[in-house]
Length: 231
Image (cartoon, rainbow, N blue to C red; front, side, top):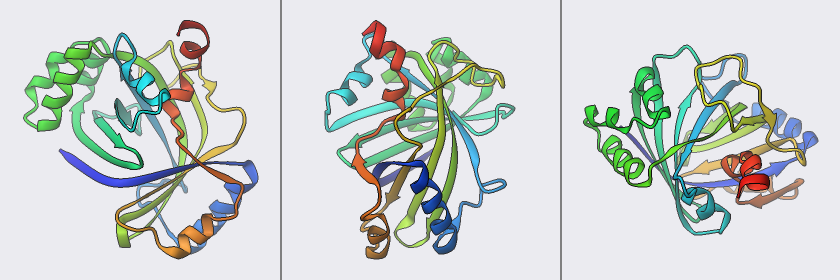
């Protein structure tokens, strides 16, 4: 089980700022050691209740909210991250437990009992939440990430682009899922994650650019079909 406590700030950025930041971060920060050829692709499958409580919690601007998702970096993997992400304003706690790909498929089919075989507290907590709320998969999201870090204060900056989603196909292990762009008004999302305080020189780098500190959510934006036609 992995538990991460940290602050998180997100910015929407233009195409020009994406490449400006990419070049700058390559010069002043270390690249994520997990990156292959400079970056990697992330796939997340989000779950919500039958009454979409987590979606409305976010859209209504509630300070305390949560999300449950499966996450992988390779469709051929045998292990998948199951994550419970809680947020209180800009502060977040992310709990992670690794489960097998077979158990991930069971969760997609709403077979929550597979989590009872795991001894980690996080698995038990997610089992209780999913069972009580009757969670089911609602949206699959892919995006390309360039990640950088500074060891002090565990500072991590990521550039997420080519964000696309599907609200009809939830087979996270498929390589051929038709997807649609999640965002049309800007190019990418810059995320700044850190413990404690953010260094002044990094804050200065972020200041004055074509950015707006927003409460952005790939999950909520990607539920465009639900938002436009089903809500």
